[in-house]
Length: 328
Image (cartoon, rainbow, N blue to C red; front, side, top):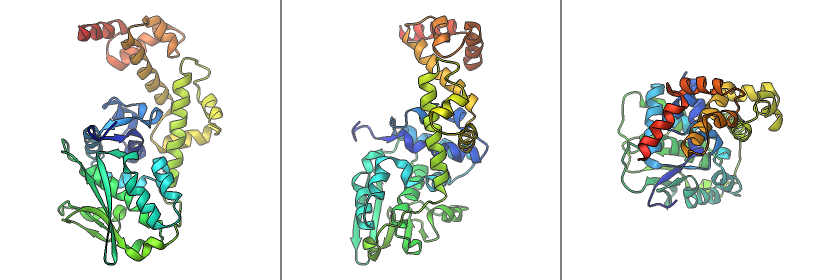
């Protein structure tokens, strides 16, 4: 993947799941519309085209009826949950090193995005910018990006010295952004950026577990469960909740609670995994419907056919015929 094809890591979209759940929207159904369910948990290292991510973020805000949904999602994002990017930041000795890591390694999360560090007088600025044209409105992703980026200087333990600047004009109800971006918020700004007092740069980091820590735990456990489930989906016994929870070292109740935090029902996740695997196998053209039924964990091909009709409205044979017609 290169900057010629801007993309965003799929793991950054996982935070949408608990956000949607809090607002009564089923995450698996939402992500299925974009062809990434249950991959949002099973393959978080994949890259999604940037325009698609912008579109997903906008649809998320619309589904939740929240014009500032991206900021809420960013607020729910723990630095620890961002993989190598977060590890580099938290492994820094002071804020200067953490800011440098955040800027230099932006491409670990976003390709076609950059963060510049500028120090002017007594102020240091982290300026966020998406390179290239925007095929879709990036506003929600910008909200989320700044909410996460703000967490870097917050590690100094001095929230009052941090300001957030947004290029967006003022709009009705935008005071709600203060809950997620802090009270020092400037709209109609020249740049989308985080600004803070220069003297914070030498302060040793003070990592704290904020409200996002619980969400990070829940998402990590959901991702682990989804990954094990995908690998064991052919075996009915091995794909049961009790077996999966044992595999990842959690009690059944703890795993259920963490799945629920993300708005995920285990049976729905298993059904979605079977659905995804069945589509992949059917599209390959290598297996009969009966073989696929056993490969995705059905003991009776008739049960698979009924499930497939529920998924698509058609039996597997009809779906295969449509695929063959499209390939011609």
